Image (cartoon, rainbow, N blue to C red; front, side, top):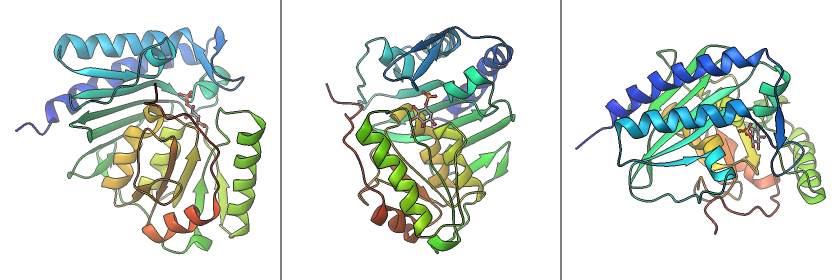
Length: 276
Ligand code: IPD
């Protein structure tokens, strides 16, 4: 039975090639289009890089399926079947990319029988390549990663984002959740502007937790397995099992810290990624 290492190696090689295109465009002025909100942006580079990644993978693995941020924006359905599936965000942190704020990532996850087998997050301005394979650990530029193991929420740095949902309910929920986290208290709240890279900070031990509501499966599928393989935990914000389609996530150094966050944050309704 395949352990999908060939696919992982191929994913890493095409992520590195795609990074060259994103880096070449990083300093240039971009043509920007709005998607679902004034904070949900897309550029020609997002669309081009996704097409390049999908066509390279399809040439090599013609039977594999895809969930890609820009393909979904163009009308494709999110359908996570038992078939081998690549979940792709060509540029996570598009607002950062547009503004040249230096945290921008290519995120690629791979599932088979609906289970994530590996994840790749390439934070390309920093030249940090995170990857993890199920049961084989998580790595940053080849060095093994270990989450902090912190169990006491009052000693934690928590990463989060306001997100791209900008209606009144989403904004008031997300800002009051930051207030609640600070009241716990935590040592600090941070935001890098890319869910994938934010969440990888938990895998490095540089942050103890990440929580977000409103992001999509392509933002966090790869970083979820990276956190888990680094010894961290991933769950829904209501304390239930992690579901990458639910648009809610807590990633933490320990179950105790994840539960402390689940107890204080509130959710706002979000349409599931796989809802018709
Ligand atoms: C966004 C980023 C951001 C998060 C948003 C995402 P994109 O992804 O991950 O950090 O707050 O919810 O939509 O649009 O840059 O791929």
